[in-house]
Amino acid sequence: MDKDACTWKLAVCGITLAFLTAGTARAGTFTYTNLTLPGGSSSMVNGINDSDQAVGTGTNVGTASHGFIWSNGQYTQVDVPGTIGGTIMIAINNNGIALGGLKSHLKFTKVITYNLATGKYAKFTTKISHPGGINVAGEVAGYSSSHKIDYGVVGTPQQTTTLNEAPGVSTFAFGIADDGTVAGAYLTPFPADRSRTTYVGNGFTYKNGVFTTVNYPGYDQTVINVISSNGEVGGSYSNVPSGGGEFVESGGVFTNITYPGAFITEIGGINSGGEVVGWWSMTDSSAQQGFIDVGGNYYNINPPGSVGTVITGVNAKGSLVGFYQTALNGAYHGFIAQCAPNQVPCTQ
Image (cartoon, rainbow, N blue to C red; front, side):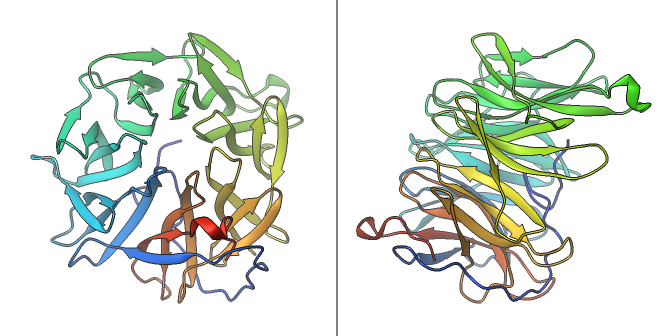
């Protein structure tokens, strides 16, 4: 359940070349802006709020990662003193409070919030090492480890609550809605009749001290890794050891998310209007391609010149963020794709 050092919340290090056809435009056309720190060589954009403020990580001097916030064409670089591996920003709420983590030797060691208006950051006083999400009130969900057990954490830099669905098993919090609902996954032993000793994931939501299990019907394993501001969740389901797919759930209704004809589909984000974004590929070795699902209609989304795209977030206005490559095994380039108000929704 840990996150790959290549990205946060993603596993996309091996993008390869593929030429695929985009979906037919339903409405407007996105305006793409490359988001890379001045003088930088690579970047990834991981989150966006409803004001089109975007956050991510990039490199421009040395090998350390530098967190950044992009707002109205201006960059604010976020570096916490004394960090060996650098800073990564993953989310930003509608009040301009960004969430990130500090890296050391390819692992997260601390979680921080950064206030764009004041220019001040705050470290979490309790042990929380993996940031998951931040809501409009500034409440953060994430997880950490102790004695080989992972446990969810929710709260503010000054005060947190530990989330453990069951004693002796790991719990992971990956996001939080504006009403305080936390979403994630917890592990339980694999059913004894399968003669396995491994653990399987169970999706959950948590609010006011109550865990609610959210498992895709008919499958062994569910992991919830995204939640919208108004509480719609998304994630993956599978049977062990065979495959599965992606889904969103709202009000007890499950909807499968599969890009037409795709071998793999992954969800990157959901906005308050129910639009779903992510990436897909034709085979397990072909390039990832971005997509947006608008009302059950899927559209291929790729910045001009890209050979592989990952979309990590979408806001209420339909603006997208993510990153792409322009050459096989080349550098990553963060981007924001914006849609003019009179064109919504944009679909290419």
